[in-house]
Length: 311
Length: 315
Image (cartoon, rainbow over the protein chains, first blue to last red):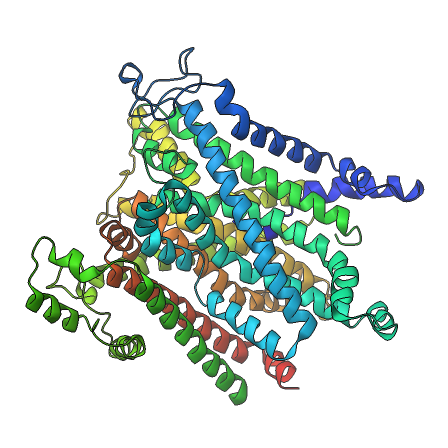
């Protein structure tokens, strides 16, 4: 479920063809190289459209996602409810739009933390070594001790209700993002640390150091630009995992609280009505699958663009 | 070899400390006074103090932690906040066995399907059947369990039940039919994962010199692949047990609660609803320690299976 292993052969063969093309034409820009990967470009467009839908959707489709239309309980798609309605008669399109917003917001906050905390700590650990490295690496190891989502489940379970009582829905959303970031930053830190360590041994760093560059300059001007690609690629691939994980937390009752919608909760609630109306579990599952695949393909495309020698 | 195993055991102590300490701290930092919640509308200071003492909450945090670890070492997970007369051990009781059965069967199934699927693909590298197989494995690996469940249930209902064919129960536990869907769902991601790994491991072995030697000696294709190749290709599969178990743990929560199976995941989700922290902590510690111990066992078995490991790491 983590995006890391998901490198479809399709992507590899597409980019291999593309590479032949641009080797003959000199050095095309980053975006030109990226755009040659149709699958990744298509995924980027789909993701942007989904973001647009999540942000502006409620302005155009003015239906209250929590309004119960008792005449439309478990309704199939119709003119009144384009994607049908759930077991409480709530409009599925409006709920998916709102749920999409939750998924994407949580993913955004998680990656913000992942980059702000995970990548930064990894960079510091790799660059300074010694006790800084020891401290950060042991901290990451402590969190690695918990398999999968277990620690996130524990944190969200214990702090969920008090946080919601004190800070409301936004607090809950941030708690979900925080607990998911808790299990994903160690991996980011480990990747960045490894890359920084190998960069530090390269000649251009020694050369820069010998010209009198300070730590700050070495990190900002020499190391960071070289790990940026790795950070962007891992963060993008991680979004796919985070969206699934957020859905798992919602499904277990740890995410956004009812009646506010989230994709995981919608699947949980509609699964019991599968036999009478399968469309209600189908649409949220489809939305989730599209996001997950989109971010996986985008991440793979970015990896090929940043690092053409690989694969 | 002895030093390597010793080092693994030392790291086990650190890992178990991490698990218990972080689990304890999360519960300790939980806002609100559990005793007040437990007492409800009653407000008797004497009872309050007695209960605080019973749960050890009148001690400083480090003593509480030592007390907690001391209990864990004796196999005692504490007392439920929700049911004062029940220990966490009693509440989890049968759930552990249910989850072990479910997870064990799923792991076994994923090895039994994943390994042959990987070999199948490796022997037909880059043919259409390899690509089709790998695409299927990628799908199994990446479709989340809670999307797989409605798909299976729909197939079961619309494909079997509605045509009067024998079908599976949608939820519950106890009858043999209850096993099939949950085990399939739990195994799916690992089948995909193991098959992809087995394929690359097999391909690597097939390219080795000793395989060519075996062929040059005139051994049959079958003997070369299954005796010389498979034994070496299977070695790295021991390392997938760790990640596979991590999948199973997260999967157990989803699968057990969606199929209403009374395992530890299901009990944990119920405890979450009741804010019964000692039970939630108990579930966390049991699952995490189980995975760590299984990992240690596979690590040690791996050291015995592959002598290269110990010479590599000690040099």
